[in-house]
Length: 105
Image (cartoon, rainbow, N blue to C red; front, top):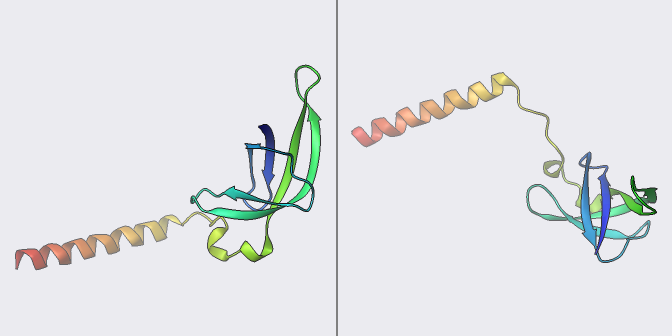
């Protein structure tokens, strides 16, 4: 197994992943997203950097989500505003009061 540093352009992340072989530019790879689903990515760049120790060269790949996989729900969402969070909390409290009133009736 080869440990490769994967820079994900779509998710703006970097992680180390083990591969059986180094993928080539233009090849597709399947990576698991934070939500647990497997998604196709295209390798857009490949390079090697010398490790901090010895004569070891570490492979890096730069990936981008395959265009057919991109849907708005799969991209990172901006954090919710405090007002939106408070509105959700207030709505949940109203629903809880209604349910409790129905159980007591």
